[in-house]
Length: 375
Ligand code: SF4
Image 1 (tube, helix red, strand yellow):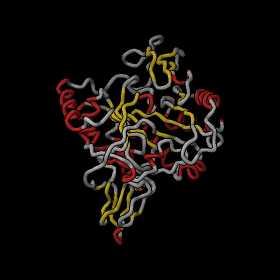
Image 2 (image 1 turned 135 degrees about the vertical axis):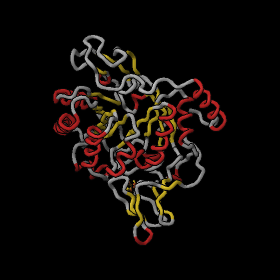
Image 3 (image 1 turned 120 degrees about the vertical axis):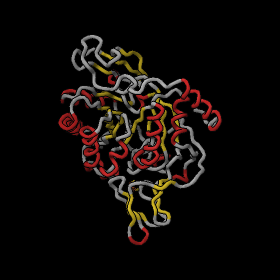
Image 4 (image 1 turned 180 degrees about the vertical axis):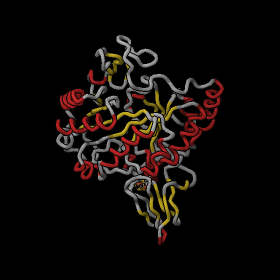
């Protein structure tokens, strides 16, 4: 999480959604498939949903612990407004227990162990506008666990004409799914492996709920979504597993959902595995393309596998170097400039340009209240 801007925390508790009271002052949180039963004065597994006096509160609400402006390709999203900037934010906590977490300094912290500052939903949007970002990403830690804040930011974002993006592990219940994703424009969902053994032992969760979320996204929403599979040597990098994962995507989501195979580096509790060799990503990409997926990428390495290629004539349409777009040969409406094939994605800003009056207001609010932020 190097380079993130860390803020200072203030302000009061915000009552959570997606909970019910239980006997003895306990509460049941049903936001994610962990279904925590939380005693008075305690927090759920994710650290940032706490029982105070028999009510559940969202400790992450309006308290981002990390704010940064990223290229949208870093989420990664390669088929949603390529080459644009995205205002990216996260809080403390997480509902998974991944041994390889690359943002463990915030995801494995309680809300009182990170520095944060009070930023209400509308101000997040104004900060994004002031920094020239047409979209906001909920990212770095798991945004599902601060879903109340996500929803309120999304509602403000729509009023100002900004897009919103979830970067998520997909571990959410159906009871909460539409409440959140009906407000979202795009998502990247981690499919961390394709075995229950990996999910159970390395993430302390289960595979099936993540697969369910991917199917709900496909069948029940208009959200543009892409999938990331972080490949960890010996744990989830077997060619047969990559083939099964690609076949499941093809069969359940279709060939047009982009799949990103990304390289692991040793971090947190998984220091004994080496970095992922480039050849592992090349091999997985070859398998997924052979399987029939149209858009398969390699990430966290320099490679031609970062480029978007026309599935029909094989012309290179978007050339990338790491997270930078070097050339974009798509037509304005996302067609191959050589053969006219319509490439799946959202290529133009569906919400248009920010009005000058709104930009001026964003500037004045940001100057007045957030001049200490060095974004
Ligand atoms: S969101 Fe947090 S408190 Fe709620 S069930 Fe999941 S881990 Fe538990």
